[in-house]
Amino acid sequence: ESPERPGSSVNGHTPDAAARALFAELTGADPAGVWSAPGRANLIGEHTDYNDGFVLPFAIAQRTHVALGTRGDQRIRVVSTVDPVPVEVGIADLEILFPDGRDAVPEWATYPLGVAWALLRAAGLDPAALPGVDLTIASDVPIGAGLSSSAAIESAVALALNDTWTLGLDRVELAGVGRIAENEAVGAPTGIMDQMASMLGRADAAIFLDCRSLQTEVVDLGFAGAGLSLVVIDTGVTHAHSTGGYGERRAACERGARIMGVPALRDLATSDLDRAESMMDDVTFRRVRHIVTENQRVLDTVRTLRESGPRSIGDLLLASHASMRDDFEISVPELDTAVEAAMSAGAIGARMTGGGFGGAAIALVDNDRVEAVQEAAIAAFEASGFRSPTVFTVQASAGAAREH
Ligand code: ADP
Ligand code: MG
Image (cartoon, rainbow, N blue to C red; front, side, top):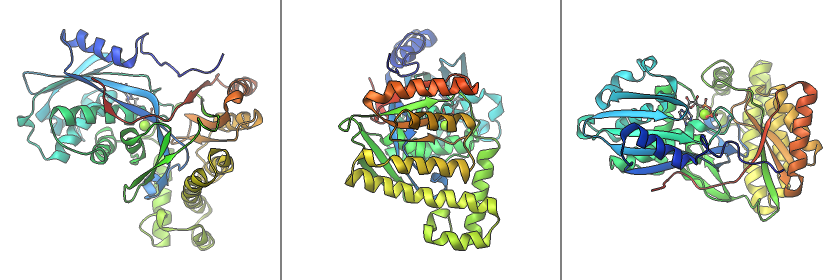
């Protein structure tokens, strides 16, 4: 049996039906509309985003759906299938909630409410001018698997509120709103990549993003035409972005840039690495080397996809994984095992994806090797005494949209 999308349903319903059913349960009425936004996988370019560098993510088919209806008052109420207890606040009180009062609501609610708060700030609007809203949320994006369920919920809510409140922000601005919500309202210091992929994704293509200029180019992946699948091996090991290792890596990158006298590590080339090595401690240097070489690998991957096609990017994916394992030190044994198992079963290339310390690996695989890769991963995890991984394929898909 070939791998399926995980979940791909919420309690037996599509996320769309689940969001609408939850809306009916909450309000007894139909929503005014349903909006959705996808999770994302990152083909290559890890931890480069907050270093002003390059990334190459793509939106996936798994999406978060938001059903929305306006209210007669000026309150905002959110509920998600992951927590059946609705959370309600006055729109004007969002200013009290964020950033310092966030503990007054459950953490998941800081995502949609934080988006509302960031959106109002970005649009410079008087909350008294806006109608209240009910939002119900359902998703088939796996949470905490490195596929950015966080950007999916942020982008879906941002688009829904932007349309409903006729704020007129464009997609790049809405991605920025999602990032501010995640950084300041939720308190997770992440970059802009996830939200840009979720807002701008296209079918069968990746989004080449310069995180400094926010300029994007659509890069055809050509996986389908080449008979290739992108397999995700979700280790089930959960990460916590707002804690520990992620902050340490960011700090090391900032330290390295400071030592080298550049605004960001984006401003260093691989030819600067010898000089960098002589100027800083070993750990800081290896963090710097990962970022500098990873930026170059993103550029090389874009060029290779365009000139030679997807079968030629395997070595770049493997080099990316080795750099994250050895220099940036954000892999875990489960991720290394996933990559090794995929390669032993004939994958063209494989690497961990996402922020690290758990989550998922991706493998580029001939369609007729997908099952072999799945079996190899499951067998290797069993032999190592790891919890069995969830293995599925992802398809590059369209970005955030209004559904109804
Ligand atoms: P990832 O983005 O890799 O899935 P994060 O830790 O960045 O992991 O974001 C996951 C968090 O986002 C969840 O713990 C929850 O707080 C919030 N979230 C994501 N999707 C939903 C959803 N459908 N409903 C409610 N909260 C969600
Ligand atoms: Mg996230």
